[in-house]
Length: 530
Image (cartoon, rainbow, N blue to C red; front, top):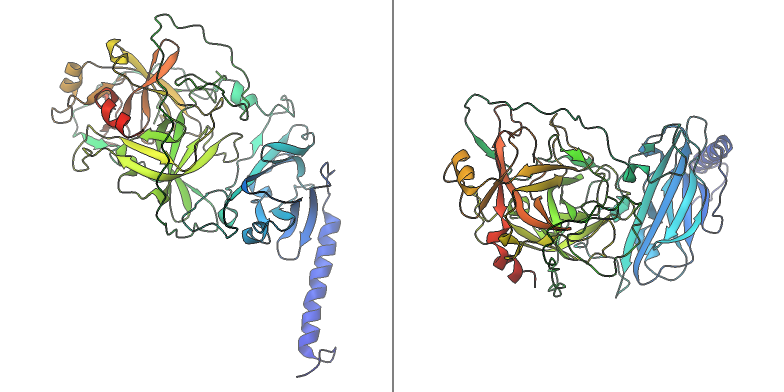
């Protein structure tokens, strides 16, 4: 075999490539403006021959159980989300799972127009801040990324049935950059959660009586995919049988009805790490469109609001809404998950901005059990359009994640004439809403409900609600709850099930929306949440 020497053409070619790479790296390093590093014990910038400039995090070790790494970068000027990549283990997840030494993670970073790299402003491990630095002054942009893995039992890698849309193959999803105007304070990162949104028109919609057209029922299938794309593609998942679920904690029950509700406390900033010691269902968070012409509301006002996703080939697609009723159970519409397998459904808790997957305090959960009502019928409108979704790991209640009270026999003794619907869906322009909205709706009597819908559609287990003025639920709000406030607690009265589609394919909200009446399903729900 020939010896490696300068006379060997292959050797000269290989040396030439190495020199090119070295020269390129030197040039790259010289061109980038490296910001101050407030975290030298854990973080540094490195040049990768194939990936370019990256930030490298080194932790002394990981522990058995939950391991979550959160990072935040700040950048001068306006820069889109692609400036900071996905946080991924280095060299791979199997290496960091061995628990034999330090664990490394890397994240690609791209300079701005002035060749300045993003600055690390916060690094935390399992909600404990390791280091922090000040944000750049406005105009600026920031980027939140995280990686989470659970190490338990054997040190082998996760089975394929375990899915975390944020941690597999670096799929922590691009987070939308938020730009603050020059007038805002650089460190005021909570402003968007504590001030009211003003993007919705306040004009009163005109009531239009359309010409008679054939009525088409919709929402008996989940909303068409509005994919949040990322690469690489989600691998095909083969599920192993899930273990028998542990008995969930008892469902919170609402206290006695109070005739005069107390005054609403002033809004406060939420702390996603502030756990609620004594859980009372139906209480609004401390931070006090499916919804068309509704009003956007502060994050945490309805902390039971849940997002139901389907795993698709190249996306995690938002499909329906749900309501958290215990630490491990979400209730939604059966048509949202019918004939789906548990490994293809993900539930988001504490969500607010559907375009921001780095929301502080938000939790994504895999599903271990899907149970729809045995009377649910896909061949026609069903008055048993209910499903119970059991998540794999219970959530910890806080200001933005808490349960709503279920309807009870006692609650039925008080006649409610109005309810509220909150959720993400289509707005008045048929565009998907980024933030949830809420609208108040009149609850119609059974007689009025039956007279406005075809007789076969309305049964004793149906409920009609709506203003018939163009406001109300639309595609994407399926599975959401009709909420009724009794005293200072919210109770879940119904589940959004069906509505009419107009001739142009838009939501026909001059008609009542049909809900599955939960007062008629109290026994079935109680039997299946024990």
